Length: 174
Picture 1 (tube, rainbow, N blue to C red):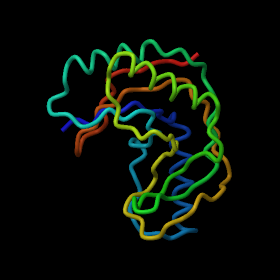
Picture 2: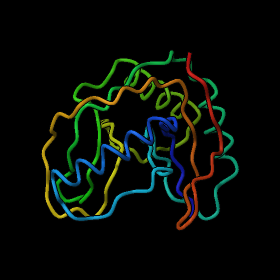
Picture 3: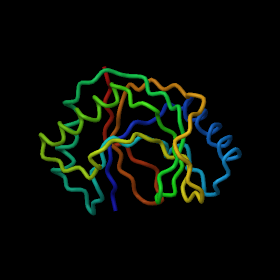
Picture 4: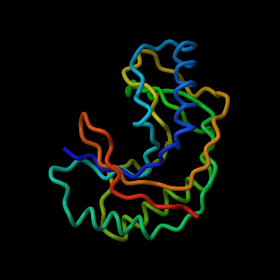
């Protein structure tokens, strides 16, 4: 099964800081569960769905839609942590969605719609980067020491069980 989604991926130096932050938060807010591998860290922008096999036309249209997006880079401070009720995941996110991130989400969603690429993302956008799964204790959004992130690209991932993410496309912002 192929799971396709557009996402933001942190650079390596930020991944290392996220690992350290996740370990400290786990010690401070013991919730059980398991930490995600740093290579899986991402913020989902638009989720296209699960496919077997991937429809060639859908992939072509998704790639073309992404190529039409024109949004400048932006800063995305990861300045809070929390969990979703019922989802059993711990995440890092932002207290306020940056205008640039909202513009990217809107622009990509519009471009996909123009190309008739159906998205499975919900109508509301709650940007988050999952750091733990199977947590046992809910945690409301809680401020943390900000982890600065300058976002200058987005990618299209193909995720298959037990394998590293395959990057199907990469687009620069700005």
